[in-house]
Amino acid sequence: GLSEKGLDHPWLSAWRDLVAECAGASTEPVQREVQIGPTWYRQALYRVPGEDVIRVYGVDVTDRRKAEDALQQREAFLEAIVENIPDMIFVKEAKELRFVRFNRAGEALLGFSRHDLYGRNDFDLFPKAEAEFFVGRDRDVLAGGGVLDIPEEPIHTKLQGTRVLHTKKIPVHDATGRPVYLMGISEDITERKRAEQELYASRQMLENVLDMIPLGVFWKDRDSRWLGCNRLCARDMGVGQPDQVKGKGDDDLFSRELARAYRADDVAVMESGIPKLFFEERMDQPGGKFAWIRTSKIPLRDAAGQVIGVLGTYEDITERKLKEEELARSNRELELFAYVASHDLQEPLRMVASYVQLLARRFANVVDDDGRQFVRFAVEGAQRAQQLIDDLLEFSRVGTAGQPLVPVDAGIAAGKALANLAVALKEAGARVDIGPLPRVLGDESQLVQLFQNLIGNAVKFRGSDPPVVEVAAQQIGGWWEFHVRDNGIGIAPEYLERIFVIFQRLHNRDAYPGNGLGLALVKKIVERHGGRIRVESEVGKGSTFRFTLGDAGPALER
Ligand code: ADP
Image 1: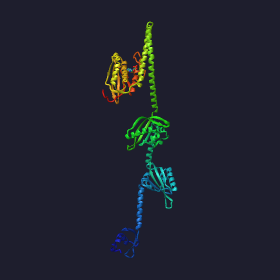
Image 2 (image 1 turned 90 degrees about the vertical axis):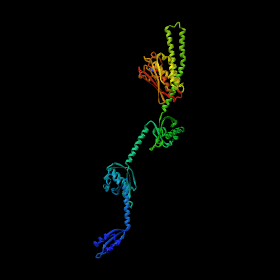
Image 3 (image 1 turned 180 degrees about the vertical axis):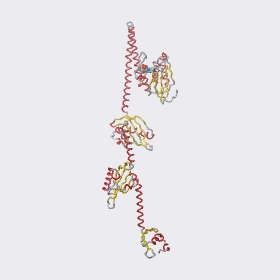
Image 4 (image 1 turned 30 degrees about the vertical axis):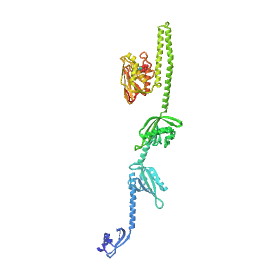
């Protein structure tokens, strides 16, 4: 009944409004779906004509409602996935290939809203050639029935210019197996592509550099297994291509003995982390040959700074080495020749001089003044030749007959030189100041010769003033630089190099006696001691000869 009381029924109270609506309306039934408790009802209500009665017919539709809700939820879920995937997803209908679905990433990539895209096809959106390519692939996929992978697909976009996509196209079939849609998933790989190209370019650059430099370059892992090398090195290893060395060990490439030495260096460099630079060693080459090389090794590190191997470079110095050996050999031969020649020349010279003198004495009564002068010239000539031979002998002995280098007091050597020069110094009225001199590594008799020649020259090539000579030394690292300075005639710049060459003189014998051997000997002595010599001079202002000798280390007694 429609009485208030009737409506108190809990079953009815839920639809109080509806009942009120029915009560006031016609006899047409009103339809609603209503949830009461856990149950859904589809109901028809109508007022019975002429009576104060509403009739209600109800069907339980709970199952259908539940199924519908589940479907809706699933759709929303799928929608959320599709929308949130960062790759472009699109769907075209199979017949005219018009777009029917687009996700957010697709809108962002192409620069269109999906509503502008729905109903349009590729020809509406892209340049013709591009559209033809896309549509061609679509048709292949729909005809072939399988997934098509397009690793690189350039596409013209409205806002971002040309992008490169990695696209997969997938046919979507209906229940009968007929393709009804074409689905596409495209990843924008433009940045990755660009990074790959940059990496490729810098790799290419590195390879070019590696192949252009005239050095062998190789790199190995922690176990000294070869990881790679440049072309020059590959050629030395007897393989055609650099990557053929990959995975090899030194044992595969070199003799056991060399492989062991190389490995020891690798380990030392990797463990200490300190490069080993410019050392000379041997290297086997294909065909039983070997090369002399100058090698440098540095530790190879990964991005975190961990040592992961060793990088080496080498320069082939075989030719230089052979030349050095050849030079040393010919120097030895020359020295021997000079020694033998000068030694054997002395005897006949002595004979000439003494027999000319004998002749002069025996025939004193028939020889006139002219004759006596001729004899004097002949004897002088022979004596000069003898002096020359003595000096030459001395010169050839520096390398062959020298004593081992030991700690020597340079002050004592200089003192002995002064004593030998006493007469000449006195004659010239020379003053020689010798500063405190250090202990050096040397051969004392050669150092005496060295000081004697330099101080002797300083006095011999004096100007109009009485000669003043200064000898001193200063320390430079493990070396001492000595200088012998004079106030003599000086040397013109163009001759500064030449004076150290054997037999080179700048004056004739009448002005300054000598044979041009003194400085050549000095230079040879300095070089035998591992030092260097040079001269500074100005014509008329004197000369300073500077040379270096190795320090003898801490002196025990001084
Ligand atoms: P020599 O003294 O027998 O001529 P050296 O080899 O000792 O031969 O010297 C070569 C030349 O260098 C000398 O002839 C001289 O011209 C020049 N010279 C050497 N020492 C000096 C010096 N202290 N001052 C000027 N000239 C010098």
